[in-house]
Length: 318
Image (cartoon, rainbow, N blue to C red; front, side, top):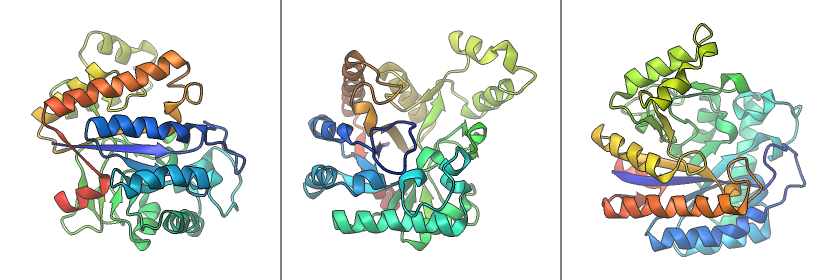
């Protein structure tokens, strides 16, 4: 099993959706985070937004880590603050997948070119902001030379937010063609590495079926999902320190190992590194718990002999 860590490396302004005027105070916390990574021989992938890629100080911080061979830099497209600005700024258009195909491509290319120019690299790993991904996005990133996508989060449905439905996508990476992003294809153009969400129960398929059934209208008012969670009958866990504690993530990894998963993809936002910027880390105590959660998890991974790799390494290993 290999550990991948993908970090949405972005502006401070959670859910503000402003085209300009973002602040980047959280990026100053990245050297502290990187020291933690270095202590446990963990190599992260920082997926950067346009706000980050266009800021000299942010680029300097990340380039220093990149040039030391300690990370990968990839692409994370927030359509609302990535030029060109031609669409109406509304909830539907904050999903990249809902924009006209040509505008999608031009936004991704603008960000891609900015990263290439300011980091002196050609990024090959991509994630859509807010998981706003579809076949058109896949085709655009293929045209720009990307090899890896990580815009899918397993077992999650974003349709209530004008987004895609990934509720039947399981955690393992797979090769695919951009004209059918959910179908594994031996000679596919790209590789999908879903952000890891799974269950603490042995059968992910059965647990996911029951979970999806109980969130439908006839059952939803009875709050059966919460009851089954408390009874430890269906426990859905994100491999993310923003919403899961270290013990649950470790238990999830153990279950994934039993299910012969070879790659796991931890994910979180850089804005959770500083208190008060996200709903996940509201106070200084939350900030301390966040970092301690990572330490406990990485200590387990080290002791279990699970190696950390960059996201782009999957292209050679899968």
